[in-house]
Length: 68
Image 1 (cartoon, rainbow, N blue to C red):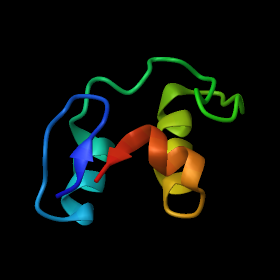
Image 2 (spheres, rainbow, N blue to C red):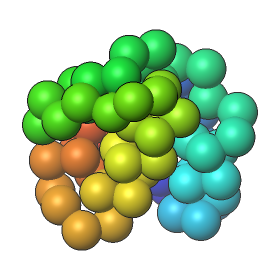
Image 3 (cartoon, rainbow, N blue to C red):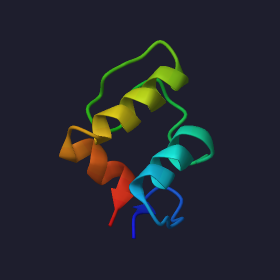
Image 4 (cartoon, rainbow, N blue to C red):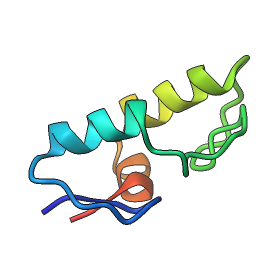
């Protein structure tokens, strides 16, 4: 069962977890710099999208967001 490492909420599927991260998790850092790789973005929204999208392809970003 995938769990959001940031807020602790559990989900039945990974797609539910990603929807939660995109829209309702308030624990995602309010910074323009990625806490995993240090990339800087012009808005918090773009950093958040980067963090979620990179979780699909890179294990470091995935480990930051998800515990299974």
